[in-house]
Image 1 (spheres, one colour):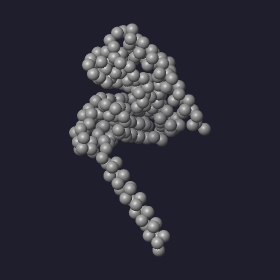
Image 2: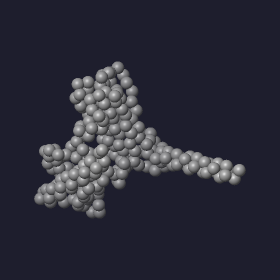
Image 3: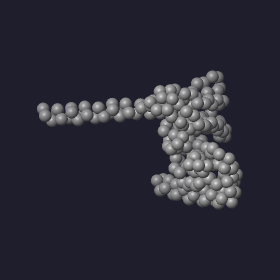
Image 4: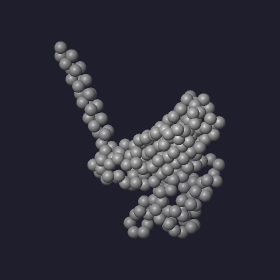
Length: 244
């Protein structure tokens, strides 16, 4: 009898933890992709819900990748900064894609905190995934190929924009690019100075103080490309270790 009571108490305890955890999970920013079909066109909306009691400043990235019946790939993306009030539901953007019966589609939605750059919410949508698998083993392979070399400009000053332009021109010419998007962001500091961050997979791999000098920016560009190359090589090495 005592043993049965102990088991019952234990089960009750874990149920309580599950309910508590579920309640805490609700108190977050959530993201979802809402879709609707009209004839041969799919409309996808990026919808964000702020379930917290705090005003938020965030960034979003919405990407859709379509694979046609002939195997060709095409993509569409929208991104930007936005603010959202407590308990507010906000539609950020909409993407329309023509989709035939033999086409496949994958969409990704990422939301990050504007200050910390931490990923706070994400969602994905997949249509006709079996048609992807007829052409390739995993849709992620297509996504990686299509997004290779993607750069995101989140700079705020003229110096930041100048550096991003220099970076984009140089990076776009490289034969080996990162399979992940690279974000160039800028944080204001005291006075007139700022900090530029080079970010991959929500990790800041290099940062430096802003300076309008062209020689200085060229030097920082060389460092940035060097650390991107090292980070990508290390990432690929770790990934290959888990391929059986």
